[in-house]
Length: 278
Ligand SMILES: Nc1ncnc2c1ncn2[C@@H]1O[C@H](COP(=O)(O)OP(=O)(O)OP(=O)(O)O)[C@@H](O)[C@H]1O
Image (cartoon, rainbow, N blue to C red; front, side, top):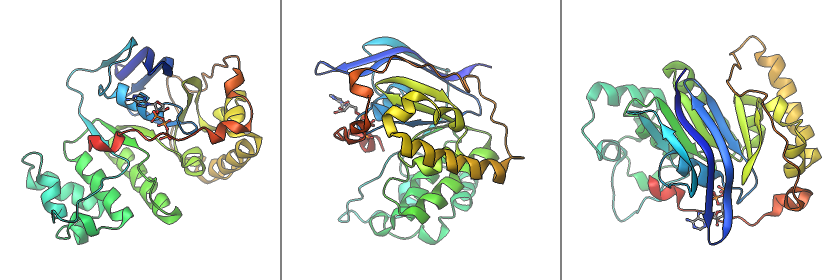
C-alpha cells in the first residue's frame, strides 16, 4: 500500500547540533503512530519535517500528492482582546459547508462552546475545538503535537478516547507526538522512540522491552509501562488489529555515552515554535 508520508535518512543540523540523525519512517494508510522520547529529542522537529515545514539537510521526505492533512497544535494562545468566537474561529480560514461543520461539531461535542469567545475556553474544550478545526478539511492524516499537554489526567483520558473514536470511525491515519506515556503505551498501535535517531519502533509491548527505551526512560518506567499494556491486553484482546508494516521492527544502535543512564530524562527542554503553525 502506498505510504502517505515517507521519510528516508532524514538529518537535520542546526547550530552545529544534530537534531535528527538519519531518521527513516513511513506513515501508511490507517497507521496510528506516536513519537515518544525525552525532552529535546527532536520529536517536534521530526513532525515538522514530515509535514514539510522544514526541509532536511540530508535525506528526503516524500508526501503522497494531494494528501489532506489536519494539524492539531500543542496549544493555541488566544488573545483575550480579540474576542473571536469558536464558531468564527472554525470558519475563519475558508468557506466550510454547513454539513461538514455540523459533522465535526457533533463529533467533537463542542456545540456548547460555539458562541463562546475562544479565550475563555477550558483546556479540554480548546483542544476539542482545535481537533474539530483539523477535521474540517476531511483529512486522511491527522497530525498532533502533544495535544493533551496542558490537560489534567481526566482531560487527557477524554481527549485520547475522542481521538481513538475519530481514528476508528473516519478510517484515517494518525501521527502524534506525546509525552503521555501511560496512555500512549496502552492505547496506540505503534510507537517510535526517538532520541535524535530512531531508537526503536513497533508495538508498545515490544518498545518497552527494547534496551534503548529502557536506557532512555529508565527500568522503572519500562516496567510501569509494561504493566499498563498488560491490563490493556486483557481489556482489549479482541479489539483492533495491530498490523503495521514496521511493527516489531526494532533496531538497536550501540548506545552512545549520551544515551545511557537515567540522567537522559533530565535533558533540558527547548520548546520550538510548533504551536505557531496553528
Ligand atoms: N529551528 C531551530 N533552530 C535551532 N535549533 C532548533 C530548532 N528547532 C529545534 N531546535 C533544537 O532541536 C532540539 C530538539 O527540539 P524539538 O522541539 O524537536 O524536541 P522535542 O523532542 O519535541 O522536545 P520536547 O519534548 O521538549 O517538546 C532542541 O535542542 C531545540 O533547541
